[in-house]
Image (tube, protein in one colour):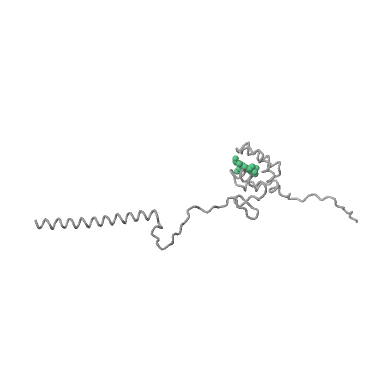
Length: 157
Ligand code: HEC
């Protein structure tokens, strides 16, 4: 029976060792899972620095030097009406690179309403067109205006 006793004692020792090993794995594994979910959990020497994951508020309607940064439009009366109605489908560049008088702005708007699903602008149309004509009027003509009121002198032989 002595031999049996040593054998079962050995089994017990191996069993205890395995259990110890197993619990080590459990603790280490648990720690790893916890660490994966809280990477800063074990940074004991860094004083509770809370890192905000919420992005800083960016001012969508920031205006610098009279320019609405997000769209590049000039800051003037009616700016936000233009931003809200004219930059949804295409870049504001398409608006600013086209310089027109009121009549042509109105007909461009009409054209977009008829063919591009632009909505009815109601009272805003006047605000928008006023803004556009004031800030994006037709460029000065390439040729100077005809001279007028000039006293020409006769060439003498
Ligand atoms: C519902 C969508 C939509 C809205 C809102 C919209 N547009 Fe357009 N607009 C278009 C489309 C589509 C085109 C054609 C784009 C192209 O040719 O690539 C266009 C073209 C233009 C053009 C160029 C026209 C040309 O002859 O080339 C101008 C200028 C313009 N839009 C100004 C405006 C202004 C000003 C507003 C605000 C009142 C406005 N858009 C709002 C859809 C829209």
